[in-house]
Length: 323
Ligand code: SF4
Image (cartoon, rainbow, N blue to C red; front, side):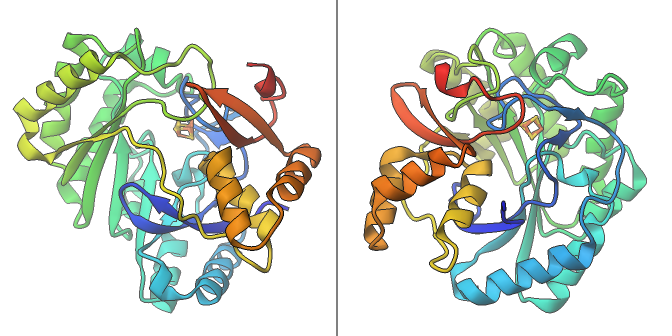
């Protein structure tokens, strides 16, 4: 069974991040064309209970104690979908922080921040990342493919309202997809909006892992550089590119290696050569473990930009290995 708490995994922004998967695959308010989890099969805006809050808290505490707090920089809500759909999110963050001396991060698409209860839940976190992929309605619909009830002005208003009141570290993330949201005018509009949010950092990312739609590819290096320069005009040295591959220091739980690999790759697909090296370092037979993972039907090997990745199969992604 997939673990609800996984890692720690090396995060480009958060160091060693113990991941919390508080949403089962795949419930989201968006179905982004670049999503590494595949297409959204439960497109929803209704907050509800997915797990009991005390189950999530217990899993985090147990895993943190097993791994050791000195190996964790952040406990991060980064699930198989949108974390704010979990109606207990605020309670879970509060209880985790009561029981453990840790910082908590949430990676959200920000689409529900127009709701008072979502804003107050996220106030509990120490670090919040919100997505800003577009500032015009038609491009927003093409890149993020939101639930039909969502309207960009309301989403933008919610993000702005949250940014004014939030006491923790707020960052933004903008994913650029070739031919969709990478025009000069859209990038300028995004940079202008992000400046209003006054983030600690504004990250520009491109798809570096197998996307939901095979055509969702990174813009050229020239366009990425142009985007960086436009952002820099508005945000100075607070702009960063997120283009790198992950490092090799994923932590595989020695007690449950298969479950921990499944948990990690559901959110963070791993290059096959990285996993092979990690398994060998643990004294495990990489061919046997990777063969077992693929044989379980829960994992597929996908080639993207010339490299092989292991990704978790989700409903609607049965054709992954044929891409
Ligand atoms: S990238 Fe995030 S917001 Fe977009 S569909 Fe995937 S889980 Fe949802």
